Image (cartoon, rainbow, N blue to C red; front, side):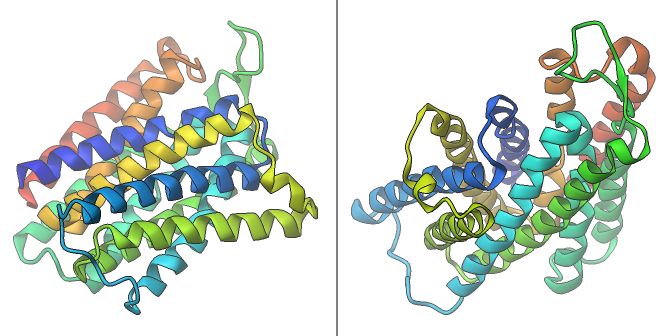
Length: 307
């Protein structure tokens, strides 16, 4: 059980950090997503080859019908990740992450409603933890922040329509990610740990490539390897590790609890946004930021009672 919590916390860190390379990339969102998938697929093949080739785990049935759900998860994830990248471009890491954190309640409610993993008084603790984590995310939603494209020391305030498209993209990403977490748990419950990585990553590559070609008509662009591909490859590697640890966590503790714990990524993203990209002024907003951290800590305490 303790390992499941540790894995979920590590996943929360990776979910924050793997978004960072996008800040430095000029690739089109869908092309970037495709290369994230390529790295994810290459890593998945390597992991499965080692695990099954050396007999570390019994080989899983690659022809089982449950893998169709993993393929569907890949398509939904691509849509969410493309929106994810567009939102980061439009409103920055900090604001994007807080709207994207609607994925927490979405995924937890789906697991709670359909998988019946948490019952009795533990349900109350889970809902309390989910609510506290959501309040933390809301507190971290700070309108007045530093725009990384502006000179240091200046502040830009996003009003109304200037940030609305980015917020809508972030909310759509949240819905997609909450749904993919639900699918991930369902397939894990069927005993498919590593094979789902193959189907999910392959689906990501194929669907992202198809959407990019439809959008731009530049079919040759998906085959062009350049230095720009290194950034999404880094994100893909981190996502692979996060996905594996998520699956392990799902096998050790309730999915709703594990998924809620991973929403700590809001805390890590705020730290990155404040101290690395300076998107938010800590001095001006320290009360909200400190309150957000306090609710995040309270959420963790509630979720531990739900185990």
